[in-house]
Amino acid sequence: MFFKGSRYEKVGDAQYTAPDGRVIRCKKIRFILDTPAIFNHLVTQGERPDLLAFRYYRDPLKFWHIADANDLMQAEELTAEPGRRILIPPDMQ
Image 1 (cartoon, one colour):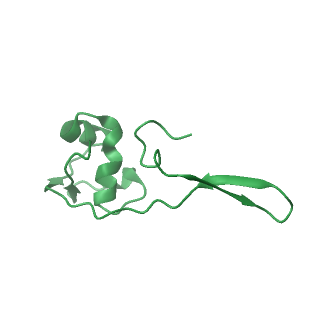
Image 2 (tube, rainbow, N blue to C red):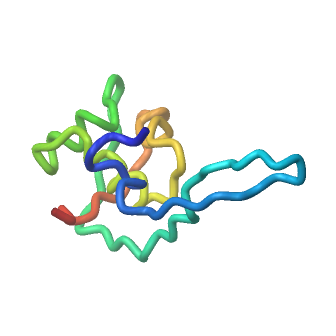
């Protein structure tokens, strides 16, 4: 369900049995550790989270590292507002 390298890839599974007997599978809660930034980036018109991840990490799928450093659940919020400064953490490999 989640792509290789996803922020949820290593989060364990859980299941819940509803009162009607249905078993509902889900992911356990993902706790975000403090993600220190090494510098910040000024967002310009037309930038996208995947392009920033490629620029800084050479991997477009690592956009979620930047989202975590900025306490965002939706990565699209990173570049939604040109002129905003966002934090860029070191590559977590």
